[in-house]
Image 1 (cartoon, one colour):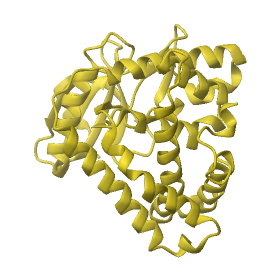
Image 2 (tube, helix red, strand yellow):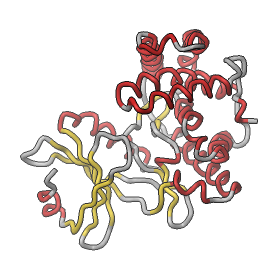
Image 3 (cartoon, one colour):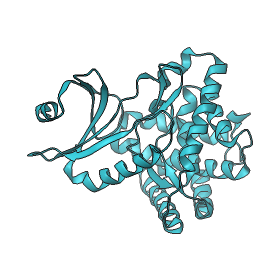
Image 4 (cartoon, rainbow, N blue to C red):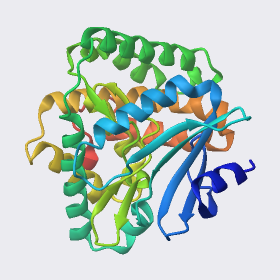
Length: 299
């Protein structure tokens, strides 16, 4: 889109497109005339309400001193159908690309650091109707399960094992607590800063829900880049004492997502369907066809 208005209005020197990521937002790195870097996210005006809520959630995260993107403003772009959010720009490198270059000890230690940050996120005080949020989450997971079962992939071998577990254990969601969620907490949305610390970016999927729901993506996707980093996050979050209640919910969310990710890929990235099916069987093997509570990779 034409960014001339924003560049003149804000006295920016340069705007560089950012291609990485799955967000529907257009993203740019902004260079001001003073040499400062900022992050610009442009969305359709129809998303105004959702973006206001996102802005407010990021403000809550920004109460903490941790290294992270910080919101500056959210405004409409005159004479267009767009709005924009301006945030601070966290300097450094994508942690996902850096992890393989680090020692095993460094990978684990960064995981510990990231886990402690995630715990702080989940301890932010919020006032919400917990019962309503958890029931909505349960309904969403069952709806997603049914979507998968109505797809062409429902006849895949061993699907009935995952379906049975998800149906029989969705009630456990109602027994959980509720917190702010980053919504997409994994190495691809973390920055290895210039002073070798962990920074957090991409809060656009932030939400309110079960804090344990944050972890399934680490098992689904994160351990492929660094298993030690994933283990570090879990140990850092729980201060080396991981409760059984976590593993129960982790198993539920991983097996549920093992099915729904196939449907999701079919709708958005058909080339990834086979990869999602492979992950489903890997997850099933990790849980010994559903007989284990704690996955094999944790050993």
